[in-house]
Amino acid sequence: MDITSDTHSQHISRQFNQELEELKTHLMAMGGLVEKQVQEAIKALLENDSHLAEKVRDNDRQVNDLQIQIDDECTRILARRQPAASDLRLVVAVIRATSDLERIGDEASKIARNALSLSEGSNNVKGLVEVRHISEHVRKMLRDSLTAFARFDTDLAMQVVHEDKLVDDEYGSAMRSLMTFMMEDSRSISSVLNVMWVLRALERVGDHANNLAEYVVYLVKGLDIRHIAPEELDENMLKKS
Image (cartoon, rainbow, N blue to C red):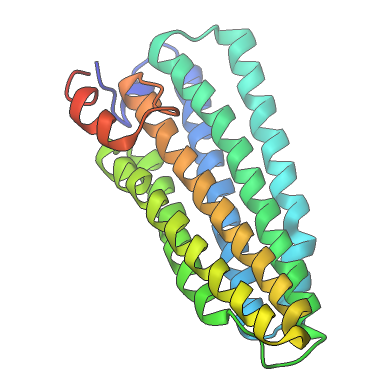
């Protein structure tokens, strides 16, 4: 049976209800922080803002601290409440989600470090158009996956899953263009490599956003879709759940 965002507020124990609601609230807070980290890292790169890049780099610790806090909350709930069925799926999904959010935070920090490297060189950096385009795409994926998690919205989650292939294609095309730049102008190799690392980080953000969306399907439907092609899933599984 599918569950909704209200399912976990219907326990006899008010304290248990509160613990689960706080768990979801803290996960959304972590998601909001990570989303801001990615946004500011890209802004620092595109606007050549070294101070903002340093801020993003230094704020990574806040993301790590939130992961530890939420993991501790999950551990206490598992030990004290011994949750079953949808409650257990929620705790498992949150544990998985915090891991992906922490890694997105790491990717934002990588982007910030590359922005700092690029700020020390030439202003004529190749590949920023590609960075802007892919960053907008993956940031939307991240925003949608967090919204889907908050609303228990499997339709929105599946839209994110489908978007991941498009990001992979855009990433491959951008990398080929940058390889051409380097072959044509050896002086651009250093800066282009930095941009390549940024694009790689963005592609990984998209992968982690896709993972978050898959956890929503697991949470609501009880289906683990991590190794199933999206088209196969749409046709054969979601309708049966």
